[in-house]
Amino acid sequence: MPSPSDLAPSSDLALSPYDKLAQLGLELPQVPTPIGNFTTHVREGALLYLSGQGPTHEDGRIHTGKVGADVSVEEAYAHARLTGLNLIAVLHTALGDLRKVRRIVKVLGMVNATPDFADHPAVINGCSDLFVAVFGDAGRHARSAVGFGSLPRRITVEIEAVVAVS
Image 1 (cartoon, rainbow, N blue to C red):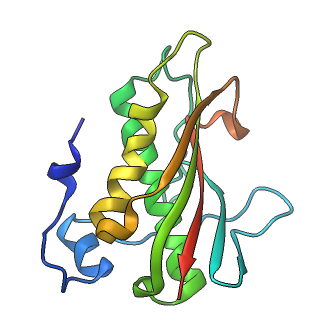
Image 2 (spheres, rainbow, N blue to C red; image 1 turned 90 degrees about the horizontal axis):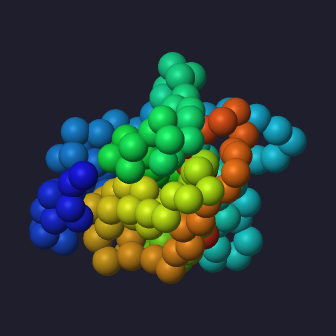
Image 3 (tube, one colour; image 1 turned 120 degrees about the vertical axis):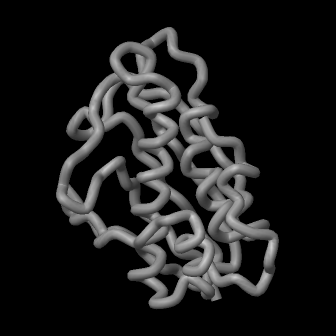
């Protein structure tokens, strides 16, 4: 599992979030289509609420399974990182420019885990580490990482966020 310093693209404050994504070798995917009667985001004043996203690839493939049984912590970390990239794509779509992100305020990470699994924070670090790598200090956030008995479509992780924007 990479450490946050392995993911940090540069300490150069002049780099935009887009530059940092490129340094990480990442491209923004299309925003996944919601699977229910909701929208991907809602803006209320200076806060943007992002609906839960999962580990969905642009071609529609999803990662499924139980962390602690058939999915390792390292695999689930990668799934949370992919989910974080999907959340960043939602931010780009909602704001038109990722430089309008003032701060990632709060993240709720849900892990589809076995009852005895206890390392939820290590899984959701996949998303948190990506946010810090892309947004620097503005990516540091309050967070909850919790386990669930199931998630929609049996996905391994679902993550939602609240973001302060300008």
